[in-house]
Length: 384
Image (cartoon, rainbow, N blue to C red; front, side, top):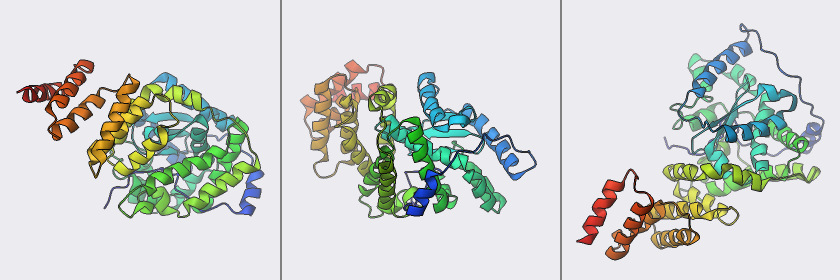
């Protein structure tokens, strides 16, 4: 079975909100804080299992332990959750897939593939608000009650785990995705929470529009099935429009683009490396081409797109890679990989002088790089 790369755990895509649904959502009120259910109940048992998974997550090597970034995202979730703030616990997970989910005990995961794609704080708030909407309406408990067999239950619980799930989470999300009515409700609640927290709800539709553009960049003629969120609930364009309609009902609010970019800046190079390793070249190029014009510190984005072009190596990709690498170097503070990428292309093309100079520059900037011994051999080879 083909691996599906983009995942939004419980956030499968849904059909459009209808006019009646819009009106009903305006009257939505948040429930009172939840009390811990009796351990003998369905919900109590699920909470206990989620507590165990949360304990495992705290010791996971995938967990980002930077306190400043964690507290920043936790604060966003708290402002959206309102009275439920004390019950929401955010975990940032280093995985290059588009995913966020929230367990019924208040454990929320936000993956770095999602954070990389957010243009501003309001867009992140849109996704977090949607997940909090599922939590407040207890949608996960409803899905649990639809699961009949023990093996299916184990797979359902696996949606909230991390270890070993990167390759199979898409399949599981498709099996246990929320219903269309649940997605409609979560979209509407998310928009309501964004407004109350002061964010511009128009950013919600942009999140899905941007992701759809990445999926459509695929060349395997299966772009609608490339993501579980699109495969399980068709009509993505309708969802984008209905979220925009929700925003027009109450325009205004902040996006906090500058603050967001400042907060993620120290982590972006690492996230870009993981994105490149994901191996979906067309999607990555679409993502980076969208990010480059509007993001500060473009040298790392240009370097990443250049590397994706180099690895794809179709048609005039190597020329495009050289152009991006050179543009990144011209800006200064470029990642060392810029010069390694240039050198690899020059070496492939038989341009020995240029290749040797670029390899040497790479070693000057990154003398302790893991591949330094191999690069030194290349330099000696090219010097003969």
